[in-house]
Image (cartoon, rainbow, N blue to C red; front, side, top):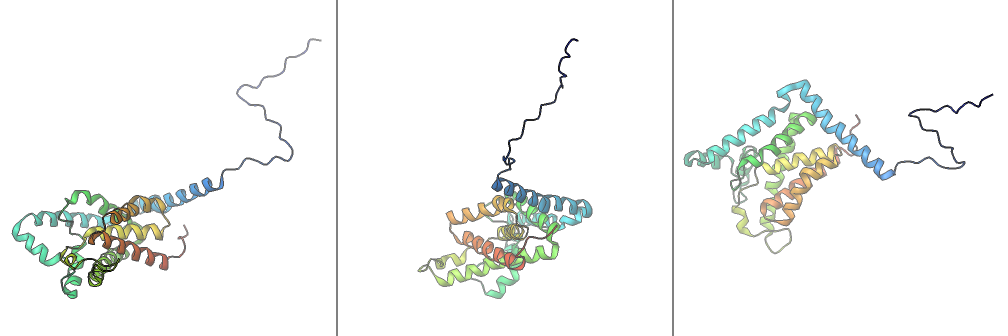
Length: 247
C-alpha cells in the first residue's frame, strides 16, 4: 500500500520538547516590580482622577478654575498703577513685614503670579496641581495643603533671614525685602503631597524633582522657600499616610 504523507499543520508551531529539570523563563524581578509600580500609579492617579471628573464634572475642578481666573485677573491688575497698589497691599508678603500682616496676606498671595515672569507658564501647573488634588483628596484638604506649603515657605524665609549669612541655613538681611514666592510654593507642595500620599514616582519626577533641582542650582530666597515647602509637605504626608492607600 502506498505510504500516506505526514499531515501538515498550517500556521501552528510544533511544541518543543521540554528538557527535564529546566526552569521556566521568568521575567526579571526589577522590571516586573517597576511595571507594577507604574501600573498602580496609573490606576491611583490618572484613572481615579478621570473617574471623579466624569462623575462630578466641572465642580470637581472648581478650585483649579477659580485659581486660574484669579491668577489672570491679578496679573492684569498688576499692570495698572492704582490696582497694582491695592494688590500689593492685600497680597504681597515679605519677611520684613509684621508677622500678623503676612499671615493675613498669605491666602491671597497663593494666587498672585511672580512679577518677573508672565502667568502663562504657571497656569498649566496650577490647573493640574489644584485639579488633581481636588479630585483625589478633596477640596478641603487641597486648600489646607496649599496654604500650609505657602505658609511654610513664608515662615522659613523669616527664620533664614533671622539666622543671617554667617550660617549655611541663613541668608543676607537684604533678602527680607524680597517678595514671597506666591503660587509656586502651593503648587509644588500639592504635587509633593500627592506623590507621597499615592506613592507616585512619575508625578514626583515630573513636577517635584525639577523644582528641587532648580532651587538647588539657584539658591535664592524663593528657591529656599520651595525647598522648605517640599520638605515639610513630604514629611507631613509620610507621617499621616505611612502606607499606600488600598484600591
